[in-house]
Image (cartoon, rainbow, N blue to C red; front, side, top):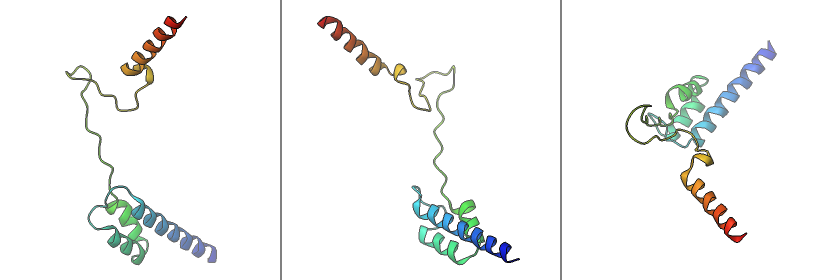
Length: 105
């Protein structure tokens, strides 16, 4: 019985620490209330405060704007990082360097 109680206390403590750290360390402003109010709720309302933070208060990251679909008009903007061999400036620079090296030989 004591082990179960210790486990529940540690689980509650972990939830509170995670919720407070997430609340104070987030880049985006929380929804509904200010950070100070959310910290008070997390600390003063056991278990439910942490759950409320993660379900209601935590700011959602902004959604990426939808780009053009395949077959539609307009330039294609990739979602992820562009590989160096897809970057026209990079390719142009390599071409220039190769021509300069050939001229020196």
